Image 1 (tube, rainbow, N blue to C red):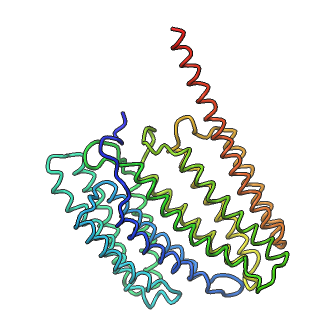
Image 2 (spheres, helix red, strand yellow):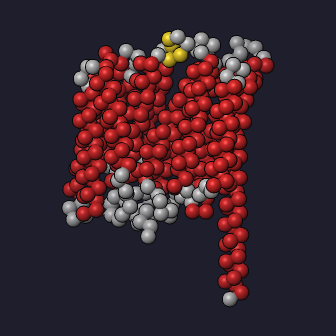
Image 3 (cartoon, rainbow, N blue to C red):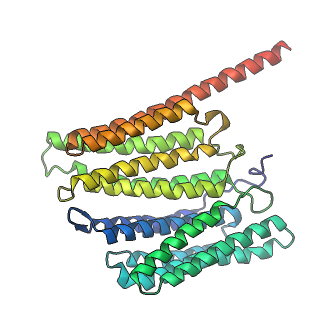
Length: 398
């Protein structure tokens, strides 16, 4: 039985889009962390801060969006809580810098208050579900998860670089782990509007691609002269970005069961997967900037580009649990993708000192995955059409 369409479809509200803008600011702040170069690559401290802060801010967006999807009414209370969180995120943004330890307390207090704020919204929502046992149970579990995570974040506010990182990572992973086991399938006010949820995730992905577009623009700088290197590398960088967003488009527009008719649909699981998709896109954006910098060592920047693209596609394909029944990947598809990925990794390693061939290998891999994905979609749709025609002809004969 499908409960996803039991309530009126929720539309993306104006306030949600305004709220997203603060995260565009945060993406640029986080990416700036990786410009602290020591010994040919990013310092280990800057890399750790980047990973933690990026996952933290995406998770905040994740929790907020999930609450709005379940219980948001676009009322005054929702506006007040969102605006408070936007204000607090500015403190996190100002604290997102390479001398993070000096801002550790400010960063974590703001972060903890945001998580606490979302938890309080769930707790207030209890009064609207006095006799609704299913929703009361869900609200209590989500509020408990958020309160526990907020507590860990507040502990991380104690000025100590080691414990700060440990408790920050524990808070992020703990929040993911606990929320992963919450199955949201039921009736009532807490029914997921999966179409709204997928649209919200898509919009965040689009904002993230916006940062990538800016990074690719650096490849078009020719100091007033058009030469072969500029044309070649700008075209390759542009094609990589195009291939990446076309891959997401095929999955979002054609493969994802946005109507929620698939039995495996899990809204929270879908959002958790997008944490890593968006994180990978951020890393690809930074990799574009690194590949254009001669002062950065070849090995590390090639490794970062390779891993980022592979992680992006891995989590993109993990979304297959939310694909339409007739579009689920089969074994031949998985084998093709795996072989292409292995070949890509080997090629990137062997060609790491030849940027011309290196970036070409990246383009070929991205578009090979895109072609395999698109062909699978076309074949499955064709089979489905033939099956429907066969069923219709059988009915007519009867």
